[in-house]
Amino acid sequence: MLELYRAEGCPYCAKGREKLTGLGVSYVVHNPRLPGDEGGDVLNERTYRELTELGGEDQIPYLVETEREEALYESDDIVEYLEEHYA
Image (cartoon, rainbow, N blue to C red; front, side, top):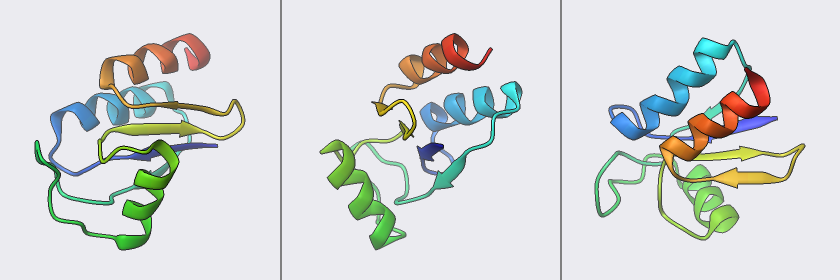
């Protein structure tokens, strides 16, 4: 299962979301907080806690693939990973 932690309005997050949608890949989206360089306001305490516990960083986008036990932060890395495994 793919899970994307992102924020609405974040241009970096949009890159991963658009690639997932373009490839027709099913995924679960989490919106833990608003975008911002220093971390925006937390919108969902549970998913925010998951984000920081899973990856150790308060950084979005964050893609988790549970089956391959992979996790990535950087939008370009996420897009490259999706192209490699799903295109």
